Amino acid sequence: MANGSRPFHAHIYFSEHDRIIAEALRTAFINNRPGVLFVGRMMESGVGPHPIAQYEVHFREEFRPSVIEAIEASGLRALVHPLTDDDLADHTALAHWIGEPLELDVTTLDPPGQNQGIPRFGKTDR
Picture 1 (spheres, rainbow, N blue to C red):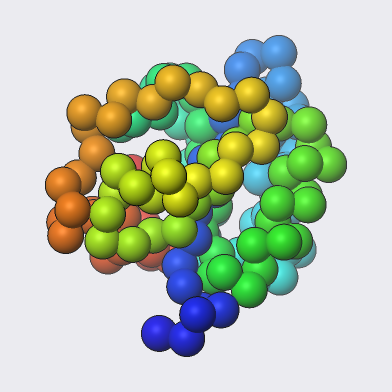
Picture 2 (cartoon, one colour):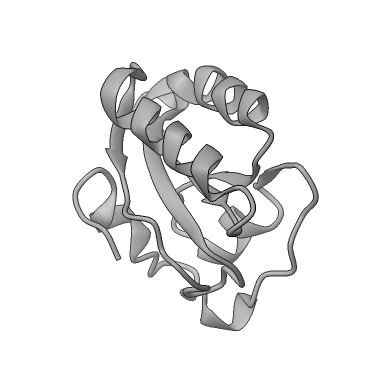
C-alpha cells in the first residue's frame, strides 16, 4: 500500500457537556469531509481501551491534516493513529493526541499481528 494510502483512525471523545459539538463534528464528517471513509456511531460510554464516550472516524493518511484540522477547530479531545499490525503501538507510540491525553486500558488491545481494526477499516462499527 502506498504510504499516503495507509489507513488511519481518529477516536473523538466527548462528554455530556460537549456532546452537541461532537454531534456537529460527526455530522460534518458524514456530510462534507473529503477523504472520510466511515464515521462510527457515538458510543455512550467507554469501549475497548477508550475510557469515555467516543466515536471513530476512518480515513487514509493523505487526509490526516484535514481531519486533524477539523478536530482541533472543534476543541474536542481525540486520539489519531494509524492502523498497523501492532494495535498497542498504534494507540501509544504511533498515536497523536489532540487535547489532553487519556489513560487508555491497553490490556484490551490486540497482540501484535492481530489488529482487528484492519478488517473493519471503512466498513463497520463496533
